[in-house]
Image (tube, rainbow, N blue to C red; front, side, top):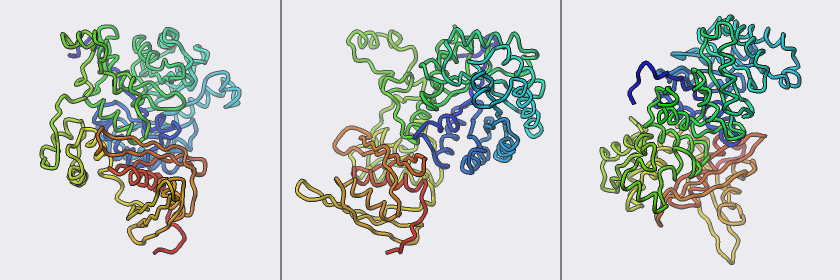
Amino acid sequence: MEHNEQIRIIDLFDTTLRDGEQAPGCSMNLQEKVKVARRLERLGVSVIEAGFPASSAGDLEAVRTVAGIVRDCTVAGLCRSLEKDIDAAREALSKAASPRLHVFLATSPIHMEYKLKMTPDAVVERAVSAVKYAKRFCADVEFSAEDASRSDPDFVCRVFAAVIDAGATVVNIPDTTGYAMPAEFAGLVRYIREHTPESGRARISMHCHNDLGLAVANSLAAVEAGADQVECTVNGIGERAGNASLEEIVMGMRVRADFLRADTRVDATQIYAASRLVSQVTGVNVPPNKAIVGENAFAHEAGIHQHGVLANRATYEIMTPESIGIPKNRMVLGKHSGRHAFEDRLNELGLYLEGPALDEAFARFKGLADKKKTVSDRDIEALVMDAGSPAVETYKLDRWVVNCGSSLSSTCTIRLLCNDAEYYEQVAVGHGPIDAAFKAVNRIIGKEPELEHYELKAVTGGEDAQGETWVRIAWEGRLWNGRGLSTDVVESSIKAYIAAINNFTRPPPGKAV
């Protein structure tokens, strides 16, 4: 679509690495966050909210790392309206090419009374003080009125007027609990624009949650009402029922530009690759009926639909698979395929590797091609997820042996290499080979985390399909994910469990073997 003066450009503020990662079980390690950040940069989002630096040393380091590598879009760090939070965020963003400090404070009566225990006047004073402090270190400051959709609109206008006067460049209207209705939320945006003194000096943003399934509807209604920025996440992941979905926001504006008269600068052909990456690093599968990126989004089974699509795709498709980066090319790759063909296929899938990461992925591809007749797109995606994994892992799988059957107990012997220096070996009995394997690993590390989730699926069809395993373990009140990939499902499971263990553990105190 060609842009013209009648099409407003909306900033896309992606918070997959902050709000998205806060969803239970969606935590990412540093290397995974870097992969997602690079993908978001390639996608062309306006802002990447990389984390909440004051929340933990790990989050601060993640924001610092992302800020140091992202050059083509703004990187934001979230802060409460506290000087210590702002100090942590400005430290984390010190190397950002385009930093933003994102300050928030609740404005609804229920939050002010029960959470903040502050009067409205005190909230205004705190908000202004925080924005002024942030402005000392960063030209770009966003202020969010948490729970704005359940706040007194006139009070929100009062707060926004005060923080704009203090230097805020963006003011954000969050529907924190997913409570608003689309027409109601659009009305709130219009009211704030019209009744906030000097509102034209700051861009108006919104951040919608999906508790009633209306996050995207509310966001697009806000765009129609004149909002300048949309906050969202890839695949809609996030707290509780999630956030507004990036892919639905982008394609909603792109397909219905005639109605909304708005668009983003996003390269929509990168959407599918971004969706797949986020699904893989978090272990959260995209439902098949998910709009835009679900398996069935472009599938047609009913006869009347198939007939119409064959005659003219526009009969039942309002966008094409290619428009979001689902490739048409189905060139078969196998053990005789060369590096050039492999790299071309990566690029068609929206996957871009270079240097050692490309070398590693190609080596994995050749190894898999020796085991399989053909290597599918899904196989390639899975291989790329493993390429460029952390150079240093506490534990690496060296070897394993299982004995099991209907008339004997399942046992597993595991040997792990610790810190590339010493080997540890243990044997355990379990209710099946995978349970025995996990128990053997627990004996090596000297801990017994709780297995919260276990999922095994075939990457593709066929008897030679790779098995992809996801595990989620609980330890000390936190959840950790792990992913494993192998043509052997037991090995895939062991790799996934060790990956989760590597995300939190340290070398055991025992002796090496």
